[in-house]
Image (cartoon, rainbow, N blue to C red; front, top):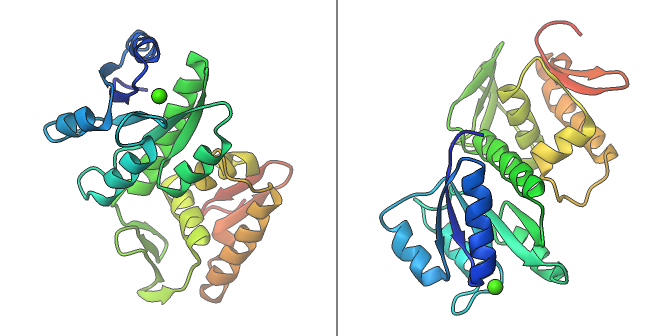
Length: 231
Ligand code: CA
């Protein structure tokens, strides 16, 4: 991970200091504030690469703040990792529903936190890319949320769209079902690995009339690959 500017919003001074030390130790730049109010002031003049947001904050809660951020055009793209205590199961679900990208349960290890940050950035990079992807007549426009073959639009479900987008950003590489779940559905999606097969099948079905279903290749015993070259 290259150097990031991380904004930490956490009211407990000890946790704030621990996070700053951990992240600075990993080569990142950290700004740490105790509440949403101070975070807003900072965000008005600086855009961090990532936000580590405590769930229980005085004043505006972490959830409310996350919702507020996601409504703001400029700030919505900043990935958010929510920090929760072990007994806050509901917080996790509510957090993911409010647009938080991931969560980490306190107390957490440095390794876990950094791994989560990497995964979130990877997904954010794939999702936020505004680049139109093309492959042999197939085109995917992430901004307009459209897929077409030789300009004829295809109708894809939201998961098939995300899956195809991921594949088009990462062609010619094999991904296991677990990796696809992690990168397309998110690390905490409550789905089984066979769900991947269901959506792969749907995606192939949409591509079939255009004769493009063979772009999604099954690699026996490993997973799936998106490639124009015969598997
Ligand atoms: Ca707190």
